[in-house]
Structure formats: C-alpha cells, structure tokens
Length: 166
Image 1 (tube, rainbow, N blue to C red):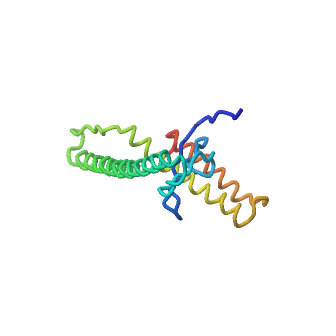
Image 2: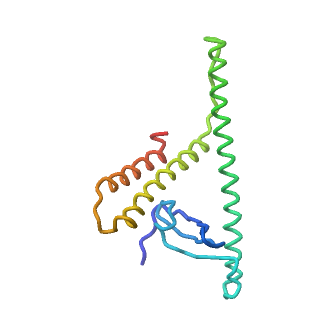
Image 3: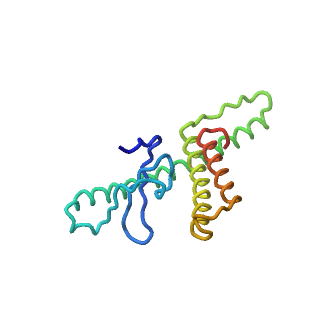
C-alpha cells in the first residue's frame, strides 16, 4: 500500500509541445515532475474508450487555467490597490500630522496568495538548479554550491508560505 501524501497538491500542466494537459499529484510541490502522473488528456483522444472523460478533463483543465489567470489578475490589481492605499495614507499623515489616524485595510487572503506566488518563484529557482545538476553536470555528481543553493531555496519558500518573510 502506498504511503499517504501528506500535503497533496494537484498540478495541472499544459504541455508546451502539444495541445494536451497532464495531471499530477505531488506532496506539496508545484512542480508536476515531482509527483505521481495521474492522467494525460488531449483533444485528439477521441479514438480511445475513455474519450468522453478525457474531453471533460481537457475542458476542465482549460477552464481551471482561465480561472487561474483571472485570479492572478485580480490578485495583482488588489496588490496595486493596497499599495495606493499605503501611499494615500502616507500623504494624509504628512499633510494632517497628529490629526491623522492610519487605518489600513487588512487583506489576509491576498497576502497569503502573494506569499504563495513568491514561494512558487523560489521553487522554480530550486527546480532550475536541480535540473541543471541533473542535465548538465550529471545526476551522480556532487555540486555543493548548487545543492546548498537548492536547500536555501526550500527554506526561503517555507518561510514565505508561513508568512515569516515577505
């Protein structure tokens, strides 16, 4: 029996070379290659008996991709609004001095989302280091600097996700 995945993350990945998607379940990683490949679907799978399910999966993946794009755009706008609120607050505090009381809107969901986006960027850097070692140097070679760099990336990503650093 397989060990239960502790922090399951379902990763949908659109392949660059074709119009198909792969679905993977990982243990907290955002990298599809770190997980167990669950399915691969394409709009050209109509010859197979699971074609109906493949098409549903394909369109669901496409819709999820659209929703992610919308979510990312909304988060970016929300971050810009938060920054403009801070700038306005600073201007009012300067103009009104002690008569101004600062009260900034708290947005924990946006803060958590942006922390996750930053952590994913760090994960991408870690994965690039690992891919470089595996592809360019060789998987059995010991490259202390790159290995330490990848370990630091893991630590930074964890701290970002916990809100320790911003």
